Length: 207
Image 1 (cartoon, rainbow, N blue to C red):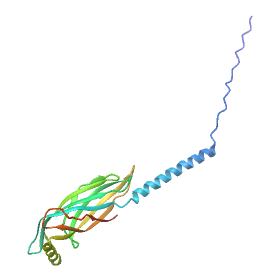
Image 2: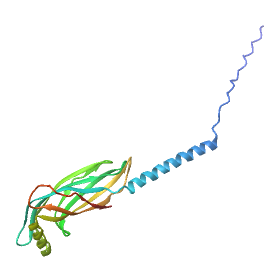
Image 3: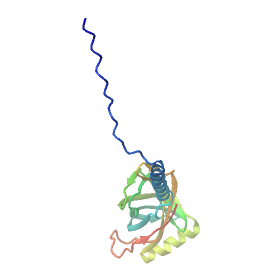
Image 4: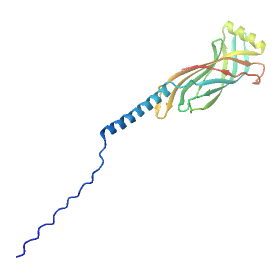
């Protein structure tokens, strides 16, 4: 009787020595990445909460059908070309609403609502609008002053802009804030519709 053959010996695979990650190095890399993320978040927050001041100018202004009645009521069509400039390189502006009004010595005589729009970084937006004043009562002082200016051929008006805006950079958007701009003095020739000689007006803005 032939004895059974013993089973072949099992060969153990030798594990090659591998590199173990240094825990201290991992912690250092994680801290550096965390610091970069925190710095980026702070930068984004600063850009959205403290953006550069928007620049507004009145580029052109004219008036049509200008008349002041004997009872000190004014009727006119005021035409304005307003330029808005966003000086930011990475932040866009969303205008949710805008109201433009014109006044004489702080007494509003006409206004208009402007549709919502978006302004990209380094963008210039021209707003051409007509504000219609129809039989609006003037104070005695303003009526007298406007009549005197009309005889000279040039009237002094003011333009007021109020808007609700929010700022966006990448995926972050700021809360809605109120933008106000005051443009004065806006000198308008009442003797002709020509824009010859009109001096551009830089507006004062605050947010």
